[in-house]
Length: 481
Image (cartoon, rainbow, N blue to C red; front, side, top):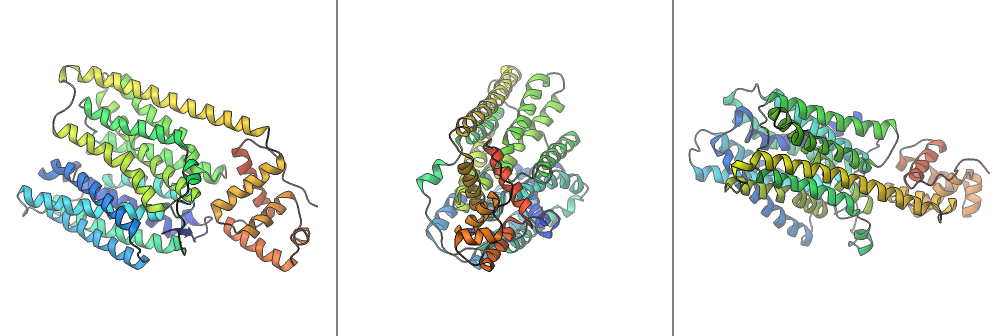
């Protein structure tokens, strides 16, 4: 079921929608944090493997149901509320001193796994239906809160854990439903995925994402355990890394006026490289600090994965829920499940070689990540150089308008008006060229500016120039006729 962006982006960062969207991500992730970290660790935390496995199977089942069964927005909201209730009950049972046996703990984790799978589908619905710059800010902002809230919650009395852990899923559901209601409006109909759409999905970032995801399995094999969230250094480093990522998006989007946050992936890969490099170089000197930085920087993988998937799905008009959740399964859930399996059944490399193996493995992965980034950047520049010569300024300008039309859902007439205005035509000349009345052109221009969230021609030219810069085609687009 496709959706379209319905809220102006100029005020998005200061809106309640942005805050509640960030809170929905934070509350959802903190539900799992309560059962695996800090003073809230329970004896049932060892069954986290079971929760993740249940989540995977539930996601696959829900994806099949979503694919073959039609539903309304109200029905989808009701399912999310039920899922939040299941998570709340599961969290309460998990922390209640009355459960007292493995069977009730397993039931609690199953309830949480099923509930969390519905949340992931709902996040796919939200993040892939809004403009990429908005989804990027929401994802990065949510991760900042995920780092900050543990510092606050660490002072919560132990006897209040059950109440807080039960309230978080319901709070996440409320925030998510409110954000979906205010941010996205339903479209009528949906089109099947074409082979041309699939061919446009960039393969190199996916390869790098997969490489970073495999590091989760590698760390488990060498017997390294992610730094416990109770560690203050880990918390501070996590907050710092997430703030750097969020600041980078702010500068890229609002400072540099770019509309393509997914192209920041080389920067995010460098952050992951830093964690891998520091661990491989300093793990023997300062193991706690190196492990903390590695764990903090590896979380950047999920930030980029969500931003990249949301942006590509939005731009290529792919079905949001199945593509987002399949990507989530491949990049996060399945690698983490394999890592859980390795730790649970003690399949690590012999302890005599763990330290050496960990150092070597992290060094290889660090070099592979940075080499992959260099190769992709080189190929991107080579492709831009190849495309620069045969493309005329007229063709480059048309291509830029077409990309804006895809991103902002412009009608064919609005795209024609945008192209003529970018060429320097006045409204009168545009009306004459299109053989329509001046009032009709003014109406199209008004709708065009509203969708692009701009107010004058110069802002349109800036947007078009930004698109031209992406392909290294610096055609002149100013002037009047």
